[in-house]
Amino acid sequence: MVAKKVIVVHVKDDVEKEEFMKELQRLRLPAFIYVHGKLNSLKITVQGTKDEIREALKKIREIHHRVRRRLYTNKQGLYRYNLDDIFREAGVSVSTPILLKTLELEGETVEFNGENLKTSLSWEEIISLVKNLGEMLSDISLQTTKQIREVVLPVAITFSIDPEEVLNLLVELGLAEYKEDKFKYELVKNKEQALNRLLEHLRGDVDED
Image (cartoon, rainbow, N blue to C red; front, side, top):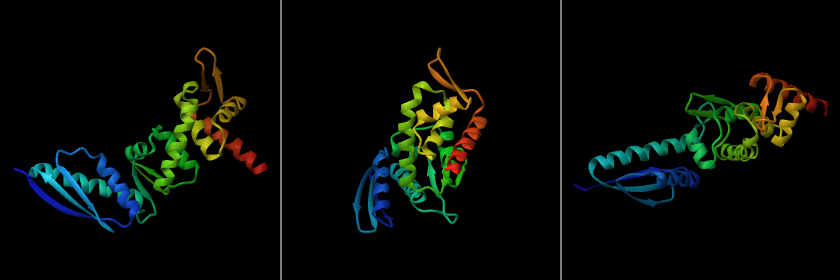
């Protein structure tokens, strides 16, 4: 038996409305959904069986909750993100250690529980950051190992240096070498040691200027 349920979702502004609608369009639901937009709200009509409607309403509320968490800060002034949402919106994916280390080096607050990220960086800013990381990653992915990328990319972004230059600097400092047989750059030191030495060198250069 087909039933119908109407709910109203309140939004603060057009940005929230747009983000919510994008998420709603990605939903794959057996129920039929019709949306009528108003100034500060969306009237959503859901049709289907009672079970289909119940599932649809649950997912609609979940996505609205996610949208609000990433658009508005909590009491600590942090935005709350699901990593999958970030990578999907950016259209690229980078490793979690690369993203977290970049945020840390940029001076942003970072809290990560293995799935959800809390940070002081806004939604538009973190999407832009991930896109930049993705572009840099594609430039050096074939000639680097996973470990060295986790050093190179955060530093390249933070200091606005071409990743190729960071690779060359790592070699000059004796922290990495180019393996001719593998056609790849590899770290000589462990990741933490290499990163700390590289940062000391770069920050020393900055101080000297």
